[in-house]
Amino acid sequence: MTYCVGMVLDKGLVLMSDTRTNSGVDNISVFRKMFHWSVPGERILTLMTAGNLATTQAVVSRLEERTKAPSDRQNSLMELPTMFQVAAETGKLLREVIAETQTDNGARGKGRFTASIILAGQIKGMEPRLFMIYPEGNFIEASFDTPFFQIGETKYGRPIIIRGYDRNMSFEDAVKLMMVSFDSTLKANLSVGLPLDLMVIERDAFEPTHERRIEGSDPYFTAISDSWSDALRSAFHSLPDYSFYQPDELA
Amino acid sequence: MTYCVGMVLDKGLVLMSDTRTNSGVDNISVFRKMFHWSVPGERILTLMTAGNLATTQAVVSRLEERTKAPSDRQNSLMELPTMFQVAAETGKLLREVIAETQTDNGARGKGRFTASIILAGQIKGMEPRLFMIYPEGNFIEASFDTPFFQIGETKYGRPIIIRGYDRNMSFEDAVKLMMVSFDSTLKANLSVGLPLDLMVIERDAFEPTHERRIEGSDPYFTAISDSWSDALRSAFHSLPDYSFYQPDELA
Image (cartoon, rainbow over all chains, first blue to last red; front, top):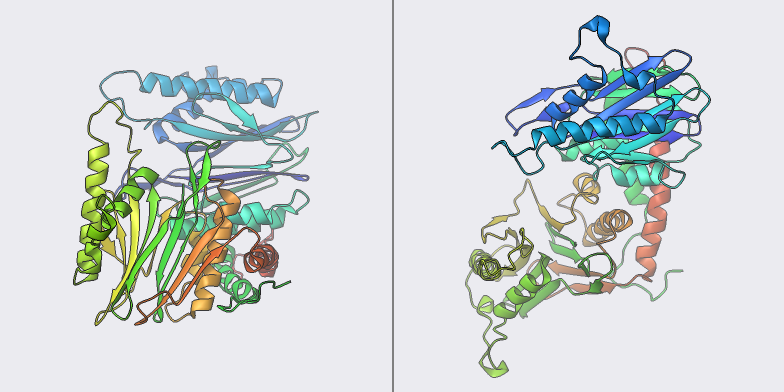
């Protein structure tokens, strides 16, 4: 499994992904799931991937034209004029890779080769944008009402994002919120694992404003994980107490 | 979908279930998913069900021998000597009902008729016990290390239970914890819905100590739901702030 979150804030974009891949619980590895390309001063594009690793690696390789000699490679994403076209091109590649693998060659599985992608970025003269791309190649864009996307093991970490997200929040608060969301997920699901990759992209910066790998020993993540337990417990105890003998109205 | 939680505490058992059933989002209804039978002073048994409604209703009907005339009915659960045997008998019925429906009669679906059951109860002279019964008819029992079970849409509401549960907690705190867990789930998934059914069974009481249906207008549930948002936000802000320019060690 996997867990990735992308958020649009007024100030820009914040992205976080885990790095665990597994094929059964006895075959786990660390693979980067966040990839970015930028033309300084002009555009930055970041992908986060969930799903079959062969599929997502194939998509990224094709984006970078790694089938060609290094000197002949040309990443078409770097030339497409709009984020919408970048999303469409990525979706097309994703659908193609899945379709090739899923032809009836005797190895066909039940959706085992599918993948989803979060695409975030900005091209000069336009707004920062965030897309979720489905295995079928179509996609949706984050809007004012749904300003974040999650892929992979999304449920454990969702309630805190729903409650904590605020479009005006600072990058620092958004990172904190993501850390709490990842911590809840890590505690509940073995198939999501440290280290985490973090990227913050300020509006109109066209390069990563802040980029970090958060290892298991990271002191801030450890502090969040420890203090969140205590903070949750205090929050819980601050709630009104239940009584078996309730008046009809508490108000 | 469905959400049900059963917990073992030192003091006894606490159970909560939602009541929403749906077949698509345009066909939702309210059905009770918690059923109990007791012999005062001797035993109490409670079931909570998740999964195909026809399957779970069939299991409960067979337990009560509703195929017979009322005067001939005999609920064998009321006579089995141990909770283990009650779990085995319930599991056997569940497996049979599913197997009958899933025979190749042209209507066979992909696991659409499966169901899971949480069984809780106590028989005189023995401990209160809690089981999770699988569609295959086998089951597991709650232990010191895993003292609660969830069925249905379990993920959204799990992190808070993992962090808040304590074997020594009061019934009132356990109810509060469940309300928070249900509130997080209700906020995230339309297929889990109010009203909720709550039952508290004190050790050696052999009857429900407290039983309530929590409606959408319930003042306590509303208070929890409102104040949990605030409490979570305060908890979040009480965490250490992230800084882009971290020292290598926070400690």
